[in-house]
Picture 1 (cartoon, rainbow, N blue to C red):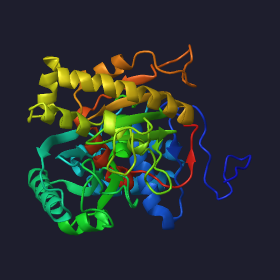
Picture 2 (picture 1 turned 30 degrees about the vertical axis):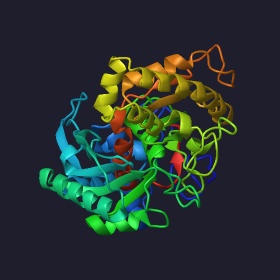
Picture 3 (picture 1 turned 30 degrees about the horizontal axis):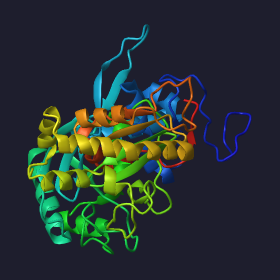
Picture 4 (picture 1 turned 180 degrees about the vertical axis):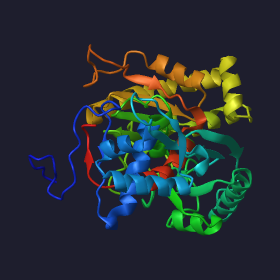
Length: 417
């Protein structure tokens, strides 16, 4: 889209001026034709969500929609309980403007992480605040069983939160639709290969379901709610049952052409190393995954290996767990450098279904990382940091998927606001 000197684009929309309130945040510009009213509603919701509370005239200035268009859209969103009217803001002379903000009770989203051993559920209100979060162990990960469990979770949430449901986000371990890798091995979901997961789960619970890779969703969770909140370009190594990489590029998730970007668990890190379920030898997943840690603990006679148990084992400096930390760190260090050389992120975040203390220990044991393009003296952030959203990060990212689908504009953007 090209711009003209009068501040308009070729299609007639206005180019936003620099220096608008809210700092250097991108705002998608609205357009006035009735045929894109839905887009303009998203523009208004997005602006109020990120900048609010705001008055009608301020919304109009930020979006470059007409005052009448804003009045109509705001009234419509208030009537639907998506926006709420606050008091008047005293600004000096004249009648103070009425302020509007996103109504937290106006809608909700559900995020579910389906792992090989667990199901994590979180509910976000319209302001993005988590309303409930819990983890349930699961034994049977077949499509029928997981679909039934999802329906049960959704019904329970609806009974507790009467707000409008915008949608459901579900995250699963990847890769998706790859012969010989999808649904193969103990860190995946056996039985799901060749199945349209979104269609099956949508039919089971009677609601729209968006499906995403767990590591990508985890990165979104950290971007919105955790260590990546103020970072536009970062990578996240995510510990589910396996290990994956999520990437945020210019503030948005990078998925790749088919949604499988970041499948680092099956990168060979030790030639002719341990056998992997994918058919290769020496994959990173065979050394640095949560599944391998649990295998080692089970072999040592330790059966309880859930999140809390791992935390206690670390407190006791259990030798099996500490041995895994050392081995995992040795194999993660060269992977860190490889990721840095390929992506040049601001930092790499470690997080997932591993307690914070173990993540901290992993980072400490990596010590002096191999030289890479990240080996700069002037760094705003360490090369590796721990995530802040813990075991709920992927579910948080999952819950954000339908919210952004419903509230985020999808047309041309301007990065000057």
